[in-house]
Figure 1 (cartoon, rainbow, N blue to C red):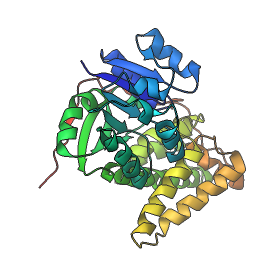
Figure 2 (cartoon, rainbow, N blue to C red; figure 1 turned 45 degrees about the vertical axis):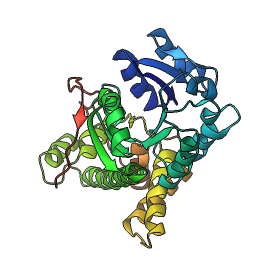
Figure 3 (spheres, rainbow, N blue to C red; figure 1 turned 30 degrees about the vertical axis):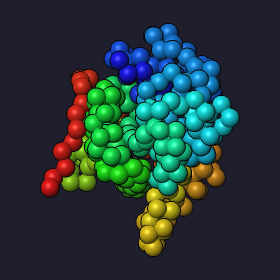
Figure 4 (cartoon, rainbow, N blue to C red; figure 1 turned 45 degrees about the horizontal axis):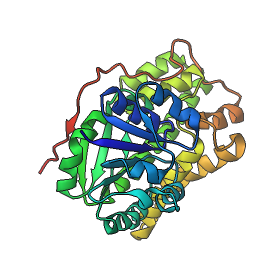
Length: 318
């Protein structure tokens, strides 16, 4: 049986690693915060003393970390993954990161006679907790087929996106789309509050209309609850939108809406801090216009009620 090493047990990583452990996959975990490791160790995961130690004991190494700089440190430090990786091991980068950085690090993995894939996830932390999230995988077809059984444990829908780096490009694009939609949803709900509409009715009107979206039906609910807890913070939004803008700029595109969205979150971070929940971008409108965009009957956090089951590959139309 494949032994998997999982480095980075944050909001998403802890849930993906938990799915592996719950599914009976031999899993070695590592995080700089011992408290993040404790719940997984209690249910059967093993621990490692360093990235090098973890790498020396695994056939597949997964990183799921907050920024490209942290990934580079984990991979390249003196006790990093590259110091311990064995031949024929696959490194899977599940962070939302820069595609060029993935390609750079993959070359170092290949020098150690290993393989690499970028495999970011999409669909929200609540779906990561139940193995129902979507996974994009960029790598050669042979590596994808080797990883597919493992990815199908962590995700319901698995898409082979093509060459290494392609998944990371698609991931920053989809995160940008979600963020732009979040800004639109907050403006729509705030305007409804300002003109005196019933916000419970407004929520249902949007959900039943051509204007609905995954963001409205998830983040819209925690906005109206008032918790705004979607397990994603403003600094991460800023990073992801910035990666999307940079990707387009490298191809010679000057984006319009993306720059506006980035500016809105710059203002949100200045007002409320980088670790504020991202749906609380609506506080800008609440504070500026003296409104409270809340309504009874909505949950404080999202819980996935879809049954957990083994995933499979998404077939691309040709």
